[in-house]
Length: 542
Image 1 (cartoon, helix red, strand yellow):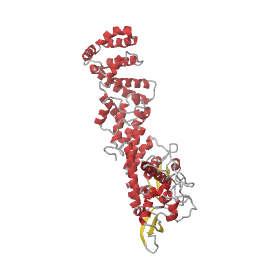
Image 2 (cartoon, rainbow, N blue to C red):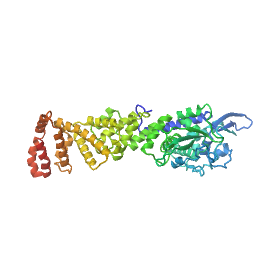
Image 3 (spheres, one colour):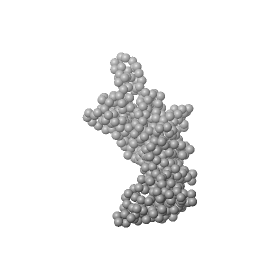
Image 4 (cartoon, rainbow, N blue to C red):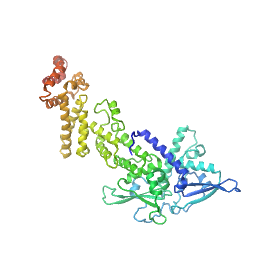
């Protein structure tokens, strides 16, 4: 599902909202074909004229969104509210009425509805017979009624007439008013979903979802068919194309079994929240990287492109701090970084631990995401050094570690040679006290990369010693604490890299590049003992 040029986070969230609004608008216009449970027969306000039009809708939308004034005028029907639950509370063939897993994810029990609207009336009892349509008649202009009902579905079209949706009637500019209307619509739809208001379908997962218990369990999520088929082509095919309803107990909704994997209770929770609200930020709850990757798999399975794009952008930008500009092509990335190693992305500990997982996920047969793969490959190269000193990197398959090693080799140029050498030495120091087997794996990789660095330094000394990194050490007169240690590392690298083929070249380069040090050595004896300490080993190299 990955696109040629995936949107960044801001664009992805805008697209998510836009498609969500379009889907809700289509739902309103096609309500008759999307499991409606209420229809208004509308006639002119003059009782002598016959009814002329039918308008179809969904009780859940009306109860979740409409103010008392609308319900009193056009929805006077009051069902028996003896049971506060969406379905019978009796056992139901192995599916719990309220999955403990679902509740742990923030799904509220509907016994005490928590409505975000101060105008909403008490939650009614749900429809216990899916497919039953409530028929109502009223005398009103069909166009006016249709516009009012459309506002309940979309939050657009009747802004000034529906000021009751705001907490106050203060004047606001159009941008703020639009944002508030969308926020209110999202909160109402979340309430409708979590309270299981007139829900008519269950989504069931069976699998091992707990790390402490290894037995299979079933998680059940209640939902609304009219929402699901409006937002996902998979659900449209599964629910509309059913030749006959699966077996279910009378008075209970249909149950659709989803595979696990790819679905988990956590990923399905956030996926459903996105389906209802058009955003992943629909509650205060957050998700970790594993759940984020599972949401991507869910989006692939359900064919929801906007969800895929948004969670991909959030993983890259929020969880992986840009993942080395994963969405940029190679030429753009090179132009941005100037081909300099270590400048293209974040090298924090969190990114170091997560990058290997991102790479394995991107290469999985059911994912094949080229953008995450590209970003993860760049990240592993950029994290060379202490960033490789993790169990996650050591646990990568050998072929993927070799790919990272090859990437470091391509970056081993005179421009990067000193930074890479210092990174390798710091990694070896960090690994010294570690006795676990994974450290041996990483140490071998670091030493293999360092050999290429040694060869570059000894084989292209004139280019290397003309780099800014080297010149800065000389210009600072060795006053920095780490300069002495770094000079020792450089000397050792040259000794390891020198051979019969490059010895003459190395001598010539030292004659051309270091003679000034012999002169400055005399001055340094009087000006800086620290500089003398650095110059002495350099003359030994010569």
